[in-house]
Length: 353
Image (tube, rainbow, N blue to C red; front, top):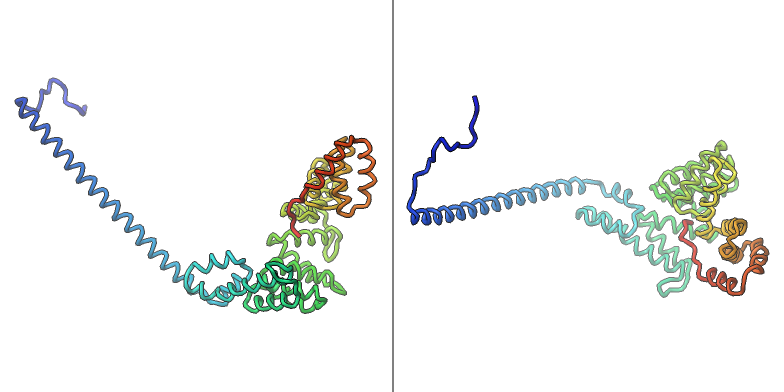
């Protein structure tokens, strides 16, 4: 059976003929009816949309309230441990989560003020004179309020004062709260102890390195490279060097270049060796400045070689000056002046320390 979807001409018109005047009246009436119907539908739709939006808001508010109740149930001591290594902006952001968090994190926010004053006294910034004792007092007040950042700085000041045992106490406190810098400093302290405690050193360096701390990654790589406290493992050492280098640590960049150059831990690649040597040089590593300058000299890039060798000489590489002077004799006075001007305006890229 076929279904017809539209009347055919043979079906005839279902509408009777109307006089012209009635047609106009009917048209106007239909137009008004359509307008009224359209407005009604629009109002109905708008009302429905408002109901949906209101419902969504109420749901969102109820979820937020429920989440806030969940957050508020966290014990204060647990919350302060979690936030112990937070920076000032992170603490301010966390304090906005709910009133309970705001109250719990107040001591850590106060610690940030003491930390700031401690750095001013330590480095002589912000219109104050350098005063190591006042710096230590400020850091200790911040540490007493639970900040691992202040604990690490207090440990550093104790270390600089020669009170290493007290410094280690604060490094350990920060390390046990999960601070990567505290773990790194504690690991290095154990490396430098007499006698060295290699088991503890490797444990804390590995924890910090796994958390992405570049200096720890470099120190762990050195231990693996030399077989100090662990079995010598060149491929693992190279892997940690590379991670530290990618994290911006210039010493690691230099060592990555050496690994590629001699094929130690990596497949030998002169291209990769050259790339990482230049990166180390551009981050201010003195030996890399010297070696990259020599590489440029061997390639005939005299102007660039002079710049890097001059920078290496300024950084304390005694062997750079004789080579630089040989190249300068081959350059015109204008080129020599330009090379020195480039060296004067050069600035190292930021590097992790």
